[in-house]
Length: 204
Image (cartoon, rainbow, N blue to C red; front, side, top):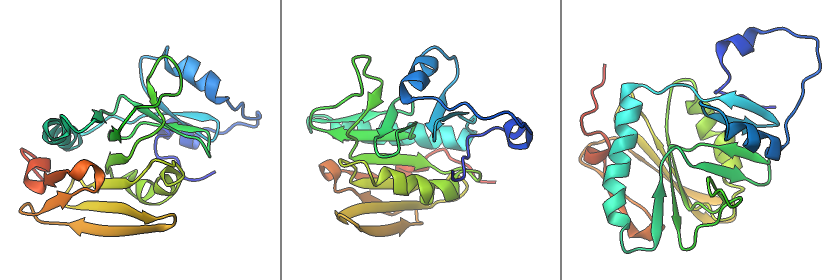
């Protein structure tokens, strides 16, 4: 098992000799849909989602506000962090900060709260999750057949990392560090100025 950034501090230090009980994906969904808080499902375990900072929340809202009007009329749909994404190869569920799907949306079941075919995924980085989002989580996302673009947005400075799939195992990488720059997506011919991403964001 790899690094799991959502595990809370108590569970990190808890010692137990009892064997772990792992959940099936169906058991996770049944529990998750009844819970008042959100948890990701990784390697058979539920990991509660950490709370977000002011900058994290502002950046996420800015991205939604900037992309939503540009997707109208393009047969593409934007989802917030409330939409789960299924990673079939690893049988895991995750909550990206934003996801875009173009064409017909495919869902895990009739409840339609788990997306199967995202083309663009966005993660706003936190100090505790940045390495995981760049490495292990990205590696898992790459196993989603429809997945084409990945955006990693820093919340403590102006920095956005953008990956575009070029082939089966080939990705381009661009890093943006100036508010005057604009990100150009391959998905739905979108653009996103960094000035929009970081509007009203104050760094310490």
